[in-house]
Length: 440
Ligand code: GLU
Image (cartoon, rainbow, N blue to C red; front, side):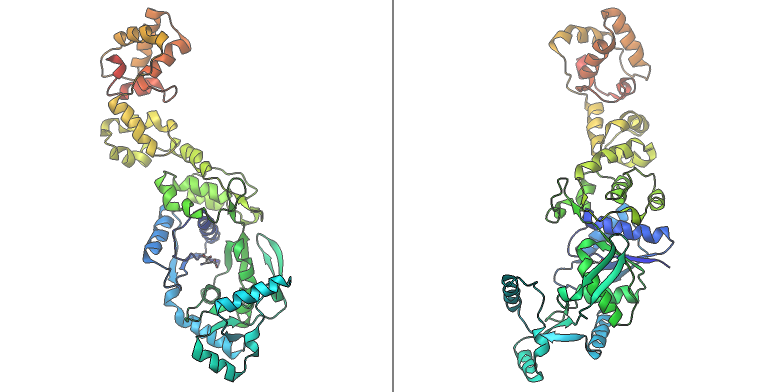
């Protein structure tokens, strides 16, 4: 059975970059009738917060990305300890005592000499006595001893990858304060939870190389890996610093709807065009991991709004009736209101403006040369209630009385009634106008 996982650290809210990872893993599992795990990488007790756990779950629920099981790394520390013990037994784990300052100095020296900044394994040379002495000064951290061979895998997005382990520092798996680090915890979880496909951002490619070796040393087969490209801004600029402003909860606040957002993210960076899907099932059916390329993917938040508008325009009244009722639109005109304005909104927030226009009337916009014409037209407008037929009858009468026709007839009337140059079909809007300020 296909098993995937989405493994955010609850140290912040989800953003569009995380969403891509979540969505890919979710769709792979659903497409094959497999299992999708939400794994909270919360071994960092200081930075992990329940508020973020709740936020992550709320965002995924909002999007309809449902997980089959949720796992928390903080409840599995004994498993990581067991793996660490095994690595010690097979002599692939060694204790180091360098401080961050020591390590920084080493790196700078190596760089000055034109060498790659790879940890020099000095701790392997310590005698037991030296080690004991160092232990009295500070707690040691633990590194995995890489086999300095090439690590190869066929990545489902990047193709054949080969990384020379000698170009990578032995990864620290346990910090001086005893905290298990992600690399070890992730390996233990992925193997023990039977994860078959690890899909994550290409910033993890080097981790993957080391994780493959750790898995193998613990006696496990490596799963299939796929590394999707990272998002950049519209000009190709790095997005990492701006991702905080692209939190899913902010997009929700701004009125972006789940299905258009998912439709956009499920295709961005693939060889397929972005297409507004009608349901999650359509998205799943149309998803193909192999259509994604390795090149950085440009993301422009502005693209989410037109697709949201198209999605809303196609919605039945039932899908939006709650939002409309919440504005105080009387129940008997709610549906007519929606049928009239649904093609003229980008997000649900725009409903409020249209309702304000209907409820309060608009400030008329009347050009100097249209003053007389509008006064004459308003005198001919029958009193409310108006029906769908009123506009046609009224403009027919106005045409006969003033001799105006076409744009010269209709446009000044629209501006006088709505204060705008464009908008919904006037025949439908007119009966909804509770107040017509131009009538005086
Ligand atoms: N917690 C890690 C991250 O958010 C998970 C990476 C992975 O998928 O293995 O980057």
